[in-house]
Length: 326
Ligand SMILES: Cc1ncc(C[n+]2csc(CCOP(=O)(O)OP(=O)(O)O)c2C)c(N)n1
Image 1 (cartoon, rainbow, N blue to C red):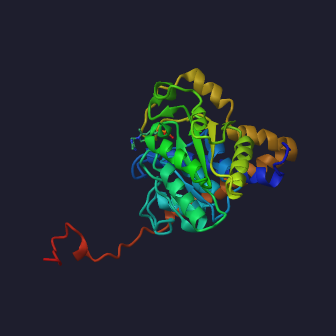
Image 2 (cartoon, rainbow, N blue to C red):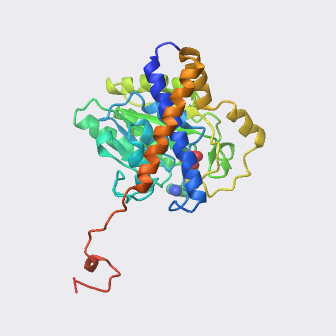
């Protein structure tokens, strides 16, 4: 096993990556069948970032997510059935079916939520870190964001104040090379966005975002530093978005050779090969089958779960015709 990552932890990360991939494959099918409310933003090919960067966190640590958050939710320990139920608007979902796939939140697991505003995860985690510091807790806040989001001014403001106030926050940039349909080279004057951290005096590291162990190691060091009062860190995880921007995107702008070269670096295949060398190919196959069966069962259960019954009195609805205040 590679250095200091115990086999149980690697199995757990593999389990969560496979489960996230399966969830998204099913979501893709269900979108095509017209069963989702709007398009879904998939993270296939990027699972190692979300799963590796959350694996060492406690429930009391906080995570803020983006519009592409399934790996973040599953990595932070949310239950597959309840995540799926939320996506399909069921009563059993984490937000009783009111949130949808971009906005899943669960306070008990420290998931403060995804959101649809590019860059908004950054100040949310920074503010949470300020609150953790002010209240004397040794918990940490971590935010995920994309290369598109790192072109927003709020990232710079957040980095500046985080270093100045030594906040316990970890910035994880999921550099998947595209903001919507635009390549990062058309948005940024530097290929390595982590260069910007130096301007704020923040420790920063580039990692292979398709290597779950590399992401886990770098984030563990950053989380430990933050927990011990050492302040913020920045991790730039280089990865690649293997599908369109969302399930409504027909694609066509990603170069086939580029896609092919990243396909050969699939994070699940790579971790699988590593585990097969430890456990044997047969055991790994059985494990993979078990994870997929569990995930399928959780998704089916969620799809059969009840829709919420709204309890708000009709008279309070703005277009009901009733005007109780008049
Ligand atoms: C403030 C704001 N501006 C623009 C948009 C439209 N928009 C949604 S996602 C996106 C690109 C995001 O790119 P990136 O941060 O790299 O994330 P990725 O989709 O690659 O995961 C844009 C421009 C938005 N939702 N919010």
